[in-house]
Image (cartoon, rainbow, N blue to C red; front, side, top):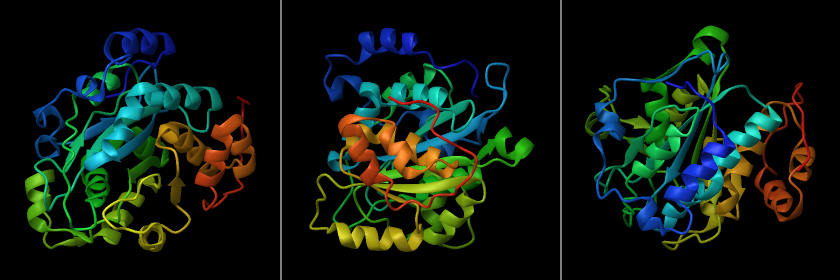
Length: 305
């Protein structure tokens, strides 16, 4: 998948019809997981080059939809998808973005702990994101199944970026809790349709995904709940993904933060990237990318907001 090109004009028309002025429950009307987004029924998700996108780059946003975290998916539908696509086109840290959105829950408690769209390059992505079920589940187990996207990406995605060019894609998990410690063999079979010989610890899932994706985790720090402390959450994630953990204090800036992390990974300086946004967004982005490792590559900031 991945033909077509995202257009701001297409987004304006789509948003006016389906998003603007509507409550979250009307934007995301699904009352259960729909079969096309059930990872257990997916054989593979493909990011393939096309005439429209000759050098495609797969980008996965895997957002927690438990409890109040559905606000991240809502922010993506308010204008986040448009900001993500258009800013990547304008800033060009990577070429021809193919975007997949995942909805993440809790494999110990939820009916649909993972849902996955196709990789898309145009307005069809918006329809698929709106089709995802905001289950708003989770449980009192002080963690969510953020490792399911890693295992799915490792086992059930293919891309021309990797197969033709040995270029990694990008995978961002997004949430406000620690990760659960492992994917059990039963969970992998039931929820992903993947057979594994043993339970896989979260670090192994991350390492598998990291073979073909630049992997990050975004900790949404606005309202940490369930008696959890931010330092405890960051302690776990920093052990799992050193210098790849982003602390975001404004969930409405998720798209700007993702674009900025990609820019930094592709060689731009954190200071230049943050300053390029201007205003309050610059401050949010500067704090969010503060712990990321600068690569010092050839990339740069190609426009100023």
